[in-house]
Amino acid sequence: MISKEEIKILLGDIENERVERTTSTKDTDKFAKAICAFANDIANKKLPGYLMVGEEEERILREKSEVKSPTYDSTPCLYSTIDDLDLELFKKEYLPKFVKANVLKSDKRTVKQQLASLKLFDTTSDCPTVAGILLIGKDTKRILFGSYIQYVQYAGKKITSKVLNERQFSGNLLTMLKEIDYFIKFTIQKQRPVFVTVLREEMRINYPYEAMRELAMNLIMHRNYQTNFPARFYEYSDRIEMENPGNLYGKVHPENFPNITDYRNPIIADAMKVFGYVNSFGRGINMVQEELEENKNGLAVFDFKEISTFKVTVMNADLEAVKAMEDEAEKKQKDEADMVQKNGAEKKSKNINNQINAKIKDKFNIHDGAENGAETVQKNNIEKTTQEENILSLIKNKNTISRKSIAKQLGIGTTTVYRYIESLKEKGIIERKGSDKGGYWEIKQ
View 1 (tube, rainbow, N blue to C red):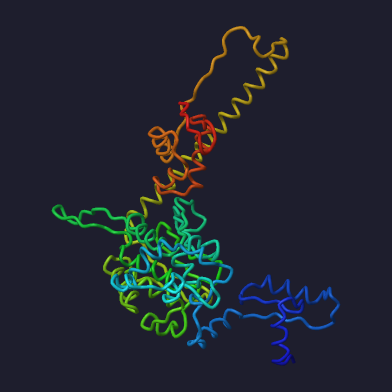
View 2 (spheres, rainbow, N blue to C red; view 1 turned 180 degrees about the vertical axis):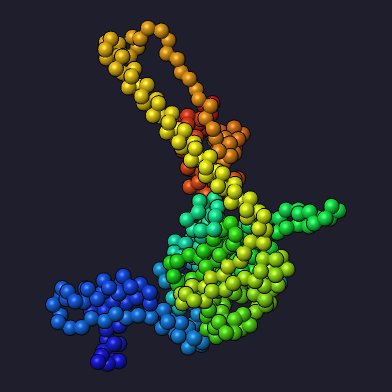
């Protein structure tokens, strides 16, 4: 039997061909491949191989035991420099929130010392901390690859449903927090009047702003930033799912959640409290449940089963709107399918006519430009989707408008805009004149 000392040696050697590491207890394909590799013994070691399972569990135990150790957000972000921080943002917005104006007037410290006093800079390593990069970095995602939120809206109840909207929230947290707050208030929350009686109506809200905002802020505050995996915000027709890298932290476990609070990122948590994005610590989740019950969403469901992620699901309270949305998406999908079929039939008919004309030309030795009579051109009435009509309207108002500006005004992704523009170009409705930067759009019909 292998001893503890031998295990330590094998784990310490990262390149050892006798060891395969995995964080999953379910990836049987990976287990099988590893066992086959050990059996083949290509290096001819004639020694047993070992499959090490549960490094994520080890990380969680380490988090629970290292209560007095520095948290990840306080560690130096090596290979970054002070030039990676937005110092203008720090001086104008961040610093005044933490230090009174009269104190700042007489503050003779260097900017590095000011940053270090708020744990945004490590003077020993002469570089920003992870919190510094996350909170006021110029290009956060370039340094901490997974530090963004991926939002996708689906037409149906499955991840295979058609994508209606997608966007990415990235950048430093001071910028991202404002964007996600605005997005939830004006895009996620939808309300409409519903008649209760002939004389009275009430507003039906799909997702209450305060509750969804709190969940999103927790997503940012408590997530594990050591991974390259982004936080996910997925909106289906009947529910919203938020999935966060990093499960319950430190003293918090399923039995005492949400009544006990611990912080994986205390510097970030403190900053979010100072800027007013979270209120009294430990109260947030209970407030969320009260808001959701009052709005008839039902309680948020928290899933702790996955050891490396934290997941919460909130059901849509406006079931009538869900049905209408699904019906509209189904109709739109059918219309687009009919359009594809129609375009395919027209293209096939055009190809047949071209082939017949080519045969006639060859038979009578007719060449281009020598035909008797004028060439006639018939323009078809091509159907356009609602979003294509919206894009055309924006182009009519400003024919130099960029794809990025179109995406922003319509609240859709730039990839989606690109797809619609390509469709309009293929239909012969618009044409790009000149370069991408200095050119303009010309509407053909």
